[in-house]
Length: 192
Image (cartoon, rainbow, N blue to C red; front, side, top):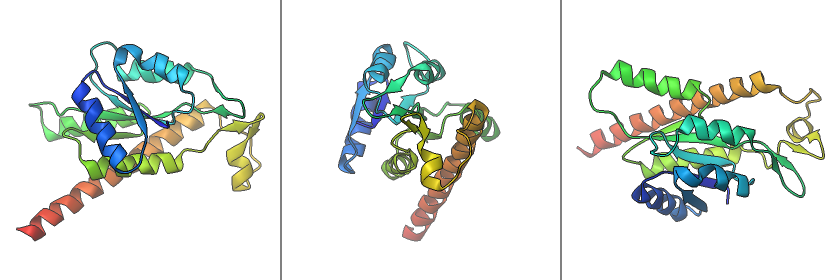
């Protein structure tokens, strides 16, 4: 299992699992109460799809705890998983306020935002992209795998570099989501 869904709503858990299963992506689901335990027990999780509004915790709190978990398997030390947020649109407020909120989420280090109701194509595209971008491990035997495979001899990245990289990936994911929305609008216009 590479994907974990965290939601306190069983219908959301089932919906995400069914969408991903239709594309051959295996995932597990849990509520906020057991989220950190599930992440501790499954170090191979590379992507977390987490509800922004949870009853028993916060997405930011779960991500912080996840980042602190040591992910060691028999053969590798794994990096913390990337987090994608499931966001229920808020009623009221201006478009500028909603965009500011989305940028704020991405600037906090989350790699993407999926708005409810969940769009199947948007969700699977983002998950497939994130799984393809996620290396199997950050280090093997204490060596930087990314540096070895890319031909780089630079030292492993330090924490600020990781934060910057996550922010960059989040911005790109946001741009891809916007492009997807534009394509959907064009498709609807063509069908009219």
